[in-house]
Image (cartoon, rainbow, N blue to C red; front, side, top):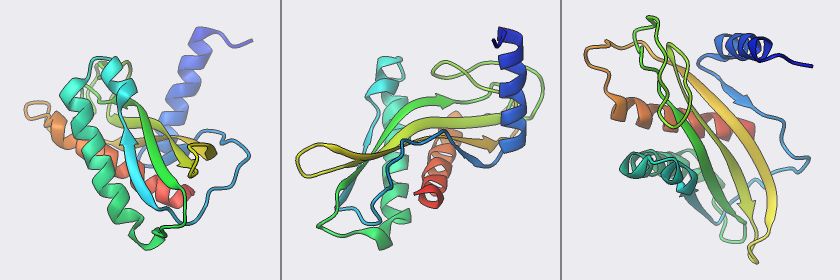
Length: 167
């Protein structure tokens, strides 16, 4: 039995210990293919949360980084690699001061994060493999110039770079 306060403490410890790292949530027992025919990013969950054009910005940054990071793993015979982004969390205190505000439903002081799932999609649209993941990045910019769009691009790129290491 886990109380809400214990969950909060455990989450805080996890985020503190994994700041600047990618954290893979337990993946389904499938192994990921090593080559992909194409790449795409699904931001429909972010749009449903009301992020609109901000979701498009994050999706475009993730897609650009997918193409760059996985350029050596392209094979027209492989499945598609689809990234489904489900959460973007930007701290309201990028200078590591106290405070809490999440874009899209959460966040931690001093850390930005992206949550989602990578899917290998076969030729008939079947999911061949999935890999849920949360990537957390330290933030240390001035609260006077928070540059949320720039930070969102950076954390989306960070997510894809960690994904590359994971699959």
